[in-house]
Length: 388
Image (spheres, rainbow, N blue to C red):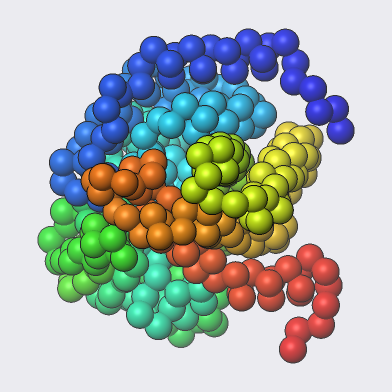
């Protein structure tokens, strides 16, 4: 593999870096899981879109720059390196967007993708249920045909961005007599639909990052069916590949965090507030982030030549989620007693971001399919080991 970037890719990196330097918000935005912060992050999405940075790898007709995977990875590196705001529409852009490109009709793509790119419509993921988390085949929420409509009844939980989003992408069971992996359909649901009740669910930090959804006779038109009726499992697997692999967690996120960790270590050692005993942990995190970077670039190179990500996305998910936890845990061990200080405390380091980052990282081995399930997938479908 050629590890060098081309002159045009380096020029692209310079352009991204320059725009971010000139246009980043002067002050940090409020948390996106509050009404005020959600709307302010939506405005930031509009600003990115107006400069055609919101979806750089998408075709120009949908608001992108039609660049390749490598350029998108470069954009992500520069975005996180700059400390830019979080992407409130990540569920739409990174998960549903690629699925729409693969399975959507032209009418659906023209209807949803431009509004997704601009932040006009923010998306939430409505998959998990009280008895169906990593096991999507156990989904019980029903979608019964009534002419041109599906009538939904059931419950979803842990819906990311569900408290404030405009739309939801859901999997429902439309044929209860079919086998577990069959009879599922993938629907796009307006969040203000009659018969849909949203109840915010607080995170460890108290912000309503999630929501429970209760469907009681909620009607969704058949034009919002993504893929064929009863073939929702195949459509959903395309989304999970994006969620576990390249799209949701590009290396730029962890490269920036690892560099910040190394800087934190140097600062704390220099001012004598910690010792150097944890240097090996810092180095492991820094090297791990770069290993993930080059693995991802190798994967992108394979995909651009017709390769398929498939079950290998499970390996990526296990690696980045556990790297994220250990990276932040190392920072907390470096900080000692100060690690527990929340944002706004006079002696809080980096605004208390290491603790908040750690609390969020703890969810990584759970969402997008628990790592226990991912290891089963790796064993059976990647390594070819017998099923127990």
